[in-house]
Image (cartoon, rainbow, N blue to C red; front, side, top):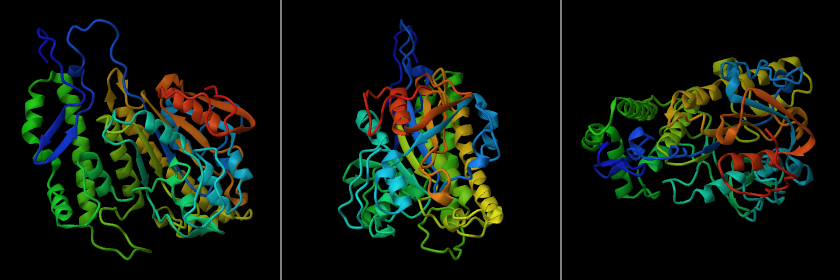
Length: 440
């Protein structure tokens, strides 16, 4: 940056080359030279990380009123000051709905709207709070929102006692009639973030995908070097860290595509790692990069869909997840579900650690984000929709962290979502079946 002429890099400036482009992270050189007044406010981000089929609540809920990291949440203990544990919230819309317990729970979770009981194409629920945020930020980022998943995203048919698969396999709803399909292939997510792609499999698409098998960092080398020459030492380090993150994701995708074919229980799309843990971390890394370069400010990710029958042999649980949650008090089944819950939380810790380690203006990405972790069911054995397992990570909008918030019984979860919209500067007086904004 030229301090005498007040020239500065634009946040919109891209690294371009061979038809691809990479957004830039926030750099000090993006502040106008010798500008008066306070520094520019950093963008705020919101993400939802969803875990299915309920939680073994005795291993989640603190014994007392304070913030305690019991067995399931123990991996998050090092981030104590960044965590807000929220207890007592209910998904009241699910209680009023008809249909399969899993479908109506996830189908109403982020909207507070009662899903229509149908297995046909006439699905109807409610606009979810993440899509309210996405609409607010429309035009400010390349991608309005990301909807990611780590399991199949079939949107038609009956998936839960007469309830449409759209309710179990989708978390976000653009409007009451439009569920947002999740993207399960890291390669497709990568291409969406770093270059437009025709969804049809014509010759042009195949050629474009072949191009992306080269590193986008190699394709943008000239512009990267030109931008780097304008930066000071601190900004160069930030840019190097960002580009290293992209390289790691590229390598992870390439490795997944080159892995020998195993015999999976179903069709495995190209680019998905064989190990679930590698898969989840790769999807988290993509979200970190998207937030870092301000490619999007909104994301949701389903580690699994409701009713998931994924097995976890890598942690000693070869049994399908959903049947285990109907444990009827059997201690062996309870222990296996707890192991799955612990595994999910451990993987989530990777996301939080990456956000906290990534600088963003005067803080970190975690400082400027609100990350919701949890699900639409508490005890899976009885399909309970009360006292939901929910926690927040991050400090967007002044969320303090380091504490536990206990709401009155039957407080709707939408009160929390209303607070999250406020945290990212999205104006809303009410949302769904909210009764007021939850104080954090």
